[in-house]
Image (tube, rainbow, N blue to C red; front, side, top):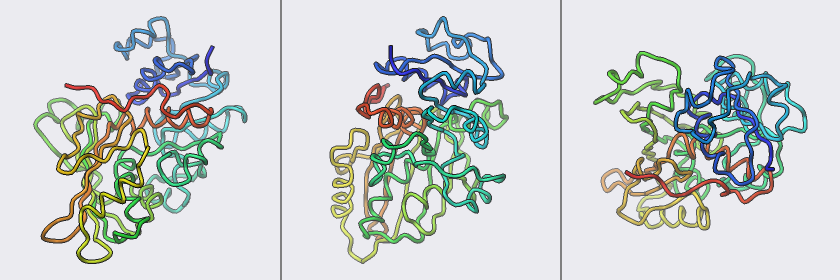
Length: 338
């Protein structure tokens, strides 16, 4: 029998992706899939793709049910995790896929989310310097935001190396509709989304303080765009070089060194751009770099599956580290195509 795990918020897209990945994990065993409003309903009613869970029904999202597990994934809306986490046993390991514990600064939480700041847990991006060991030593880990992973993976090594300025970073990133969750919303209806691109939360996206915190950037403008696809993120990050004449190979060398040996972050060969479809179903991030011939600005492009490395895959990678397992267990760097 493997390590007993429970998933709260299992009826959502991230929760469903967690269940899919956990079904193929050799060391983790799902003992509860909690979804309060769907308690008693078969999991396959909402996730018909998860045929291996044919006998599993959604349970209540109570501390009693979740507390029976050795490790709990909280795939709940932002602001909903803190109260439930406080009720779970002290010995239970927890990975929170929401935003409740990502930010160290209470003022940033208040500005972007509102309400009381619950505190901060170990930040769950293993590829950041020092984070792999910190995650392995933690019982409470705050999973990254989906947009945040795409931007941080591209930007953080360059700021750390001092080759781009931490001010005046500009991000334009497109995401599939699953990033908005499974709640019924007029703006997410198929007829509204198809053949359309639309920006949203312009000038005040909640992942901005998380990106600043993790990269060392001091100012960042981000424009998220809703794209007519179910899953995936493509981010374009531009930054000013610290000195004139920066060559693209210098940028690529910094990224190459930062991610040498990393199983899930891939710098593509020169001239090949990331594609969201190439990351579907995977825990991978694809990166590319360029230097604009007119402005001299560094341009970084990044693609990932928002439900994979942006949510469920990242959560399992963190859980593997917390449990002393190989971090790639149950995860794939290969996407699904077509």
